[in-house]
Image (cartoon, rainbow, N blue to C red; front, side, top):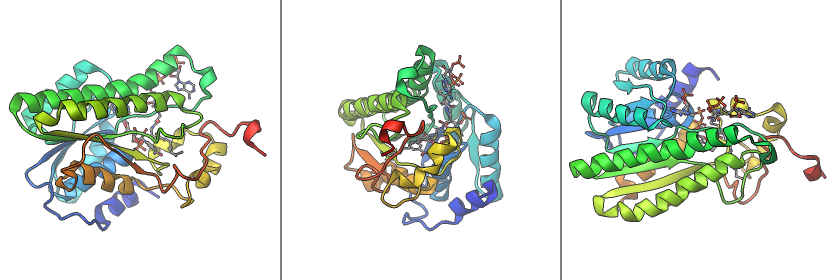
Length: 280
Ligand SMILES: CCCCCCCCC/C=C/C(=O)SCCNC(=O)CCNC(=O)[C@H](O)C(C)(C)COP(=O)(O)OP(=O)(O)OC[C@H]1O[C@@H](n2cnc3c(N)ncnc32)[C@H](O)[C@@H]1OP(=O)(O)O
Ligand SMILES: NC(=O)C1=CN([C@@H]2O[C@H](COP(=O)(O)OP(=O)(O)OC[C@H]3O[C@@H](n4cnc5c(N)ncnc54)[C@H](OP(=O)(O)O)[C@@H]3O)[C@@H](O)[C@H]2O)C=CC1
């Protein structure tokens, strides 16, 4: 499917949410230049939010901003590498100066490479931990600090991976995301007095640009990942992010919402290929 068709599908899809759900609100979405982050940003924009997207690649952000403009909606695309603390601080300054303090933060930036864990180099391990755990932490802590300083409420959604069953081929990312879950549960308590809610969405296999890094033999087995025998769509994950970010989840904090077509209950996923031992 071409990018234009994908974007139209997201823009025109039915949603159960009312069109003014986020009217007057501002949302910051990391990873908003593609995949799940992009779908969430566009859905939030459809629901009336002012939306800022961030990611490392300005051109990707520009394409989403241009698409929204073609639909009569202003989005803002500010590039940042969110695993660099200084860049996160600068990003918040820019967002606040040019758009306004966000009410909602969606952390969808992240990623990893597939490799048997026994082969990880220290550099590879650190890259993935930094790109997922550190980046999410820097973004959520800064949001909380600014909400504390301005005495405003806020809502955070961290997009992670399913951690309960483990996921062979990506142990580094599972470790990093389990760290995010631990931090989320802990600060849900610490930050409740500040009127901050924080939750996670754990997608199963989702058809996004990010799947390009997996080997063909792994991709060929993707239909075995869950009982629905299909990947999720970015919009299906976005709907869950919106549910947790909005007042629909006003009594939910510190939770993980799994959106995986039942993959936690049945399914196999060998992201670095299936070892011979598990073939018969
Ligand atoms: C059961 C329930 C169902 C649950 C179902 C769940 C399904 C899970 C499927 C998940 C899918 C997704 O998340 S898809 C969406 C995410 N998108 C991505 O993952 C995109 C690709 N990933 C990335 O860009 C990554 O973020 C990452 C690799 C960390 C980029 O960080 P950097 O830019 O720092 O990385 P680099 O500089 O390129 O590399 C840093 C080092 O990392 C190592 N490294 C990098 N790529 C490597 C590779 N292919 N193989 C080995 N090692 C590699 C090397 O040591 C590198 O150092 P040198 O050797 O010196 O170079
Ligand atoms: N697709 C799937 O099957 C699943 C995805 N997930 C997770 O969902 C999240 C979104 O993934 P998805 O949309 O599928 O994949 P994408 O690769 O399309 O999205 C990831 C986005 O994050 C951005 N990003 C990555 N690292 C950084 C960084 N350091 N600073 C700023 N932006 C960054 C990338 O943009 P750029 O490179 O320009 O910075 C990219 O737009 C990720 O955390 C992913 O691991 C979880 C389970 C399953």
